[in-house]
Length: 130
Image (cartoon, rainbow, N blue to C red; front, side, top):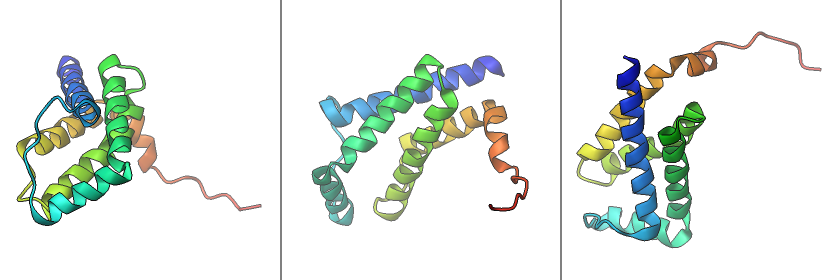
């Protein structure tokens, strides 16, 4: 199981780092979008928002690839992956295989690092506010 988590972590890290770098270096041709999806991406691109997303993808992917601060890398990447799924769900035809694969990989890595996340789901003790 541990080896499978490491392989999955490396695959997700590589996928996200390459995707993030592509936002800056444009070495892969992306499929064209039409209508609302194209307009939405145009606005995000001109606003600089996609640069932030690309930076998060590179940083999160690097953290997963190196194995340092993996939970932090996941915390940076999961909102990006959710936004990609929502984009495809609402503005695209349907989530593509890469976005579904990245979501599945991320879920598997979270399960592998569950000990780092399980405390987030426990209620805090009630203390009076001073």
